[in-house]
Image (cartoon, rainbow, N blue to C red; front, side, top):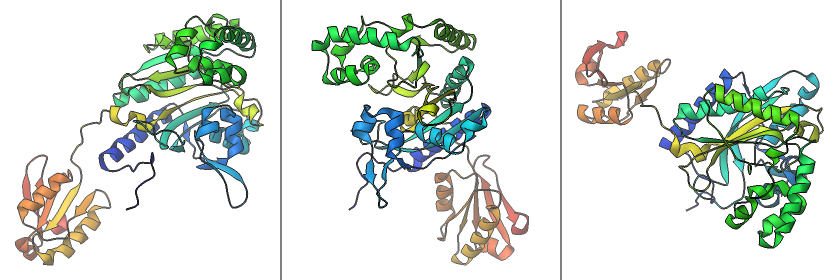
Length: 403
């Protein structure tokens, strides 16, 4: 037997219902905020992610599904969504058109990492990207949108905030942080030793417990913000407070690349184990320029769908549509014809085997149909159909021409 590849799962039955419910809910809310759908390819040039995600990142260094195609192109399956949307934004010359452009997307991403609960090698994300708005109010809108989505899905969360500063306040802070880490270099893990030279801000995000103990006394960027960044961060906090969105400050919440600036946020859950992040985002004002576009302010977020599946509170399912069956083989063709007409406006499921009434009622109940409709020998003779409302428990005989 051929099985699916490790970390690449099928989505069936109840999982599919949860999956599509998430997509429809998130889509509805993104559209309320004025965002429009964008779809980018699963396959992109590897260079796009090396430049956007960073060559020193684990994603690029260890996790990408990368290969040389038949045209000798270095390509990979997309490991995240933002880079492709930015590439499309530039390729369509929207960076030159000016104005405000707001997009949402959902689809499969691929990373070769150790599969575990909520973390797969093929997984799905929902994300949004906003271009052309240089205002902390747009940052707040991103956070409000995630909050609205999680609230509608019945998922509890904690919101964590930080500011990454800007080109004025980040460089001196980076030097201060490197000096601090150098003093305790003997006690940190190999990844942190490497990051000191390649991506020093990322040491604060280390998951090693002993490293985190050392970094408790590390300098905090939030204490070194310039006046503009400080004012924006205070404004963001006030907007959230005014809109009753609780938050906590996490000074270790970082993004390791230079094009990230100011707002960084993460939504975490206490119900999914150690991998607690369920959504994250922030401002990346220099990424469009970094990928050869015109300077454009931008902010966005992404949510991992599989990580949220078990947390979703599904609405109570209502009975829906028609189950149509026959008690006589001669009535099957008529049942098919009636179902074909009903499908122009409603869901209709046909059973092609003649059964007794009790078994038809069981089958209708199993698919959660609203109406069980059965044609027996008498109904076939009289041109009628027996119909039972499984919700209201009423039953009646109806002329087929009036059904």
